[in-house]
Length: 205
Ligand SMILES: Cc1cc2nc3c(=O)[nH]c(=O)nc-3n(C[C@H](O)[C@H](O)[C@H](O)COP(=O)(O)O)c2cc1C
Image 1 (cartoon, rainbow, N blue to C red):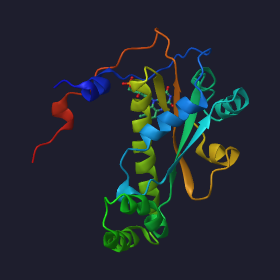
Image 2: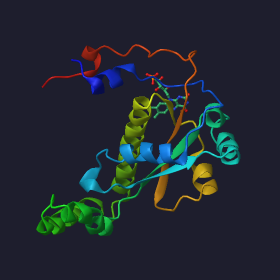
Image 3: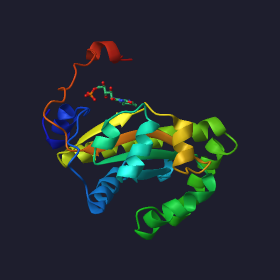
């Protein structure tokens, strides 16, 4: 197997050491998020938000809430990738651009909304699961968008979720699913670690 997507998957690593002098413009940050948000979500809900923490003051604050990890102040930006609890009532609005583009027939919207209502209405655990799924998929796409630009990245769960939500004014309907630092990686970073054998993680039925 060889193509550019596979080569990207095979060559990505987590960055620990960043060049603190390297910065990203707001336009570069926007482009990373534009690419990341082409990732799939259930019903195309796009139930996510990306908070780009990139000023020295905001980075210093976030670092204190994230196990004092130096990547947060050294990387150009750290995204707080938020997943949003599913609210089925916003679905027509989320699907409208696909209808306007002639991709999705308008009469399908009601059916999708009914299915979403059946799945998520008054189901807080499912709403939360979907927020975490969407946030994790969005964070993954962001990591590979950064890799494609020659940038290093660090997914992080080492942070105080309640404190991050409070300090960065997340809505009650939002969860900080993951932090993702992005910046210029220094050459001293580890190579990719070996993985468990496929035979240990794959079952055929
Ligand atoms: C959900 C998640 C949370 C992680 N949290 C942290 C973290 O808080 N700090 C850190 O340095 N690395 C963190 N990592 C990076 C992992 O340690 C790393 O992905 C793993 O060791 C595999 O290495 P590789 O990404 O270089 O292949 C996290 C990765 C994931 C996917």
